[in-house]
Image (cartoon, rainbow, N blue to C red):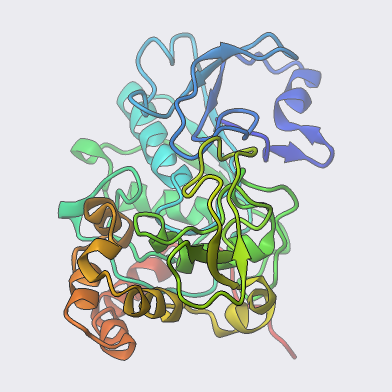
Length: 349
């Protein structure tokens, strides 16, 4: 289970294993495909990898979980994807489905752990199981503060897989990783998260996706700028156009007015360890559209993991009131998360 981020130094994991004479039966790929170039939500068909001639099975769209045929002749599954530590980033949902399929067939799963740039804090509402979906399967906050290996162990031990099956799970931990160390992801994990600025802003800005506001898809600053054509402040503008990862972006060819946020991410946002609601609140208030602000209310609720955030905005709740409503869920999640942490905070002395 790999994509373009599954690198061992300068060589892809698949090539490394083939050089070691490991018998790879087939490859599985997540959202965005094996090469990581497909749009968000784009259907990726099964294919043959041109370099290795191995079959690639896409685990996205209607085929999210490996079937008996997919796992035929497989003795062990290896999972290696660079996660970004945000609940609605779909690689952890793919992980859960792969774990489930392996558990049902008695196939061991090895997860190669990787650092998570959001691994040292928790924020956002905890998902309501009634709103479970591919952008949020399990009852965790938007930012859950765990590596993908820690998360896999929690899912397994808390019996969150279908029918409470247990996967024979093996986590290969990272060496010399501390929770409070800054980690720069060396390869863009998906087309619209091109750099660390976008990755650090992603938990706060993804809420704009099902609203009238563009997050810059179709530009060179995806998830680093926000705006829409009717925004009143014309001090900053951008025009979405088709590009890699956005074949038909929101407001294609139309000038959007708003603001660039990339300058404030690596400092203030990352140091604060928090999900920033100021931008969502500001644009909702300034839109004068209110209910029309949400172009897809159902999907907004799925991203939030609850319908409360949307209702709170509609009811005129303040940012402080909204954040206070998350506290009980976050406090309840803390001891659960703590049981599965593999990496400690580095002693600064």
